[in-house]
Length: 288
Image 1 (spheres, rainbow, N blue to C red):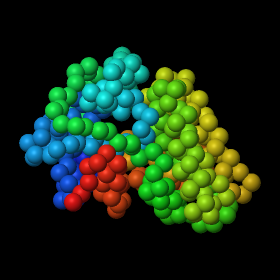
Image 2 (cartoon, helix red, strand yellow; image 1 turned 60 degrees about the vertical axis):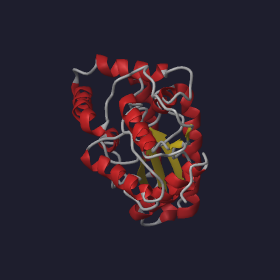
Image 3 (tube, one colour; image 1 turned 45 degrees about the vertical axis):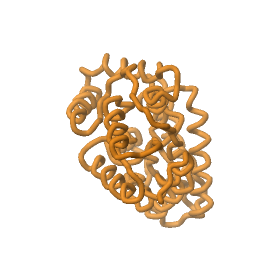
Image 4 (tube, rainbow, N blue to C red; image 1 turned 90 degrees about the vertical axis):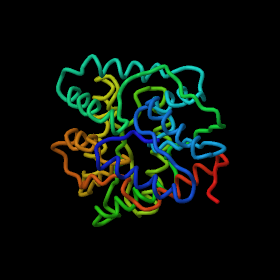
């Protein structure tokens, strides 16, 4: 399961599916808890004769309103996500203005073929097989290794450099501590492995209400500026799965500050197939 996006983004997911499919039957469902996409993937797996299903979310964090809604859609939670319902409602209210209009148009254009629909539904997937949902990327060591590689590619003198990891972040305030714990763990790993002066993190809270997002961006800007103070250098590394527009918002939000950046996301990178299999194995779905 993945958010989905433009053709390049979706092709990365398709390539990953094809690689894992050589080891264990694999299908994809793109979108934000898109019931139609989830149902189609389940139906395809059932037709292939599988005995149980592992739903592996290729999302940055398990504590996500999208994944809360996905759990509901898959029959793993009793109630839908009211946080996601409210976020979709806000997006709909502002769909006729600026970036929201562009995002809405992009979502609508991708929904038929890419599964990138942004609509809230209380329908549920019909599944007759045992199904379990795994953890997302979170603070998995594989993620830390990629982030360290990204930081090293920007580095000149690690002992003078501060790495700032930047993630999208949740809508729900209640989910923020879980995101912060995972990002703090990733930052600590990057600092230790890369030998950097420091490594910290920030979030955009991009789908939260304007005042929450503004406060998050102010905090991020302060951390980026602090890293470049007193002769230091700041390396900004996105904690994003793939390019899809958010990286451009990061650049805009950090306008006027001095920092190193190349916008490289977690994908493409070798090893995601092993991560998927590792997550699936925890549910009992294993490659032969």
